[in-house]
Length: 393
Image 1 (cartoon, rainbow, N blue to C red):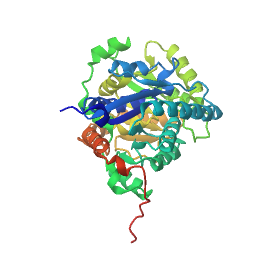
Image 2 (tube, rainbow, N blue to C red):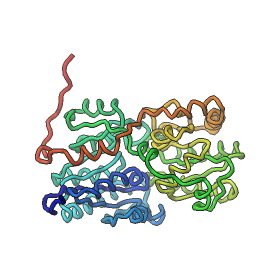
Image 3 (cartoon, helix red, strand yellow):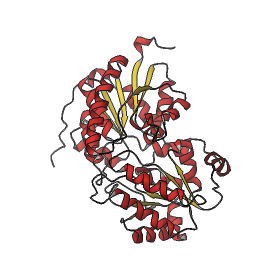
C-alpha cells in the first residue's frame, strides 16, 4: 500500500562533491524506492563547477533530478571559502523553505556542510549525519565534523570507536548507530567494470601496472600544498615503470596550485599518466581492483581501499588520527619517504597483508542500518536534545 504525499517522510540528501555523492548514491536509491518516503537531492559547490568536472551530471546519470544551490567555489583562499559558506547558507535556506524536508542527510566534514547543517538547525529540520566521530588532525575538517555532530539529531558512525566518541560528546546513545562505512559497502555491492572496459572509458591503456593517486590540500599543514604534491609526483617519477591515474583534488584552499602541478605532470608524461577530473563511483572502485596501490592523502585511501585488497600509501598529516587497517602505509611528506613507502607497497610481503582485506570500517549491513535509522526515527522527538553525561566511574 502506497502512502499519500502528506504521510510520506520527506528526506533531503545534500551532496557537494563527487566523493560524497559516490557514497550517498546507494542510500538515495534505496530511499527513493520506498513508498513511504519522498526524497529530494540537493547539489551544490563542486558539483556545479565546470572546473571540477560539472559532476552534477553524475547525479543526473544516476536517475535523480537534483535541486541546485549555487555557491562560488573557484576562489580557493580562506577568505573566499568563508564568503562561499555564507552564500551556501543563504541559498540553502531558500531551498529548504521550498522543499520543507522532515530530515536532511549530510555526510562528513566539508566547510559547506557546516553551512548546510547550520541552516537546517536554525530552521528546526532534523539532521542525520554520516561519519561523525572520526579524527583527521591535519585538516580544519576535523573541527567542522565535530561541530556538525552537535547540530545533528541522528548519527551514523563508521566504527564502534567512533560511535563511543560521538556519545562522549554528549549525544544520546539511542540516536547513535554504528553502521560501518557506506563506501566499503559500495565496494562489495556495486557491479564493477572490467579492466578492458575501464581502459576504453578512460582512453588510457591500463594493461600495464598502474596506481591511483589523489592529493588534497591539508588545511592545517604549514607547508606549501604545491610543494607537498610535487614531492609525491617526484617519488612516482622514481618508479617510472608504474603508470598513474590521478584525479583532481577537492576545492579547499591551496587546490589551485595542486591542480597546476598535476596538470603539468600529466602533460609531460602522456604515455604513463592519465589525469581525470572525476572518475565517478563505478570507475573509481573498478580502478582499485586493478591498481597496484593507491597513494595520496584522501580519506578513501584509509576507508575503502583496505577492502579492495591493495596497499594504500597515506602521505602527511591530513588523515592523522583516523583508524586505519594494516594495509595502510603512513609516511612523511618528502619524496624520499614517499619513495620508500612505494617500495614497501610493492613488496610481496606487504601485498600479502593487503590481500587479507581486513577493514575496521566493514559492516555487511551498512545500507540497511542507515535506511532503518533514517526512516524509523521518531521525528517528534528530534527537535530537542539533552546532553548525555557519561556514567561516572
